[in-house]
Length: 210
Image (cartoon, rainbow, N blue to C red; front, side, top):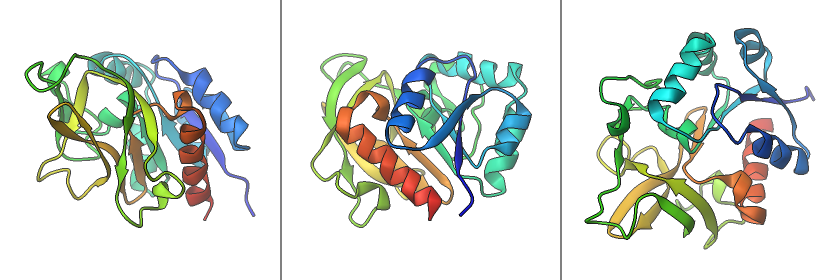
């Protein structure tokens, strides 16, 4: 069997080290990458990140990573987006009007409204209701993940078919996990979610290897 190497894309956003340590803990081969050549040579890609939508897209552009990333995904290379990395997969965000995302998925992220939630950002442990039969759900029914975000992917006509997991914060339902073709994404941080997060990453790694 050919070894699978997961390339963790460094575009100037934080938390790369924690993602790498989590993957190593579950026995996955991984490395932090920041060049088009490394994107092309990686077996699968992970786009993590914390920070702003505009800075995230600018970081990808400054490193010349947008085109090789899009080309790799369109050719079928597996991609996992985490937190900001998930939101960058969409067309845009209310956080950065006029700035396009990677446009791999339809729709835009929106800011939580103080009228609907207790506080912004959404910080802390929350449950993901995974779709029945979802491969990512194995061993994760009724479990909680750690969230830190002010913007969310709405559950609407553009995203409902993509959603493999839904969460509720205050009065707002939103997409917290998705799977579409070779793209997977998670709004919370699996690398900060203890055994639950490690189980999710293990499920994802096993799915990529199949």
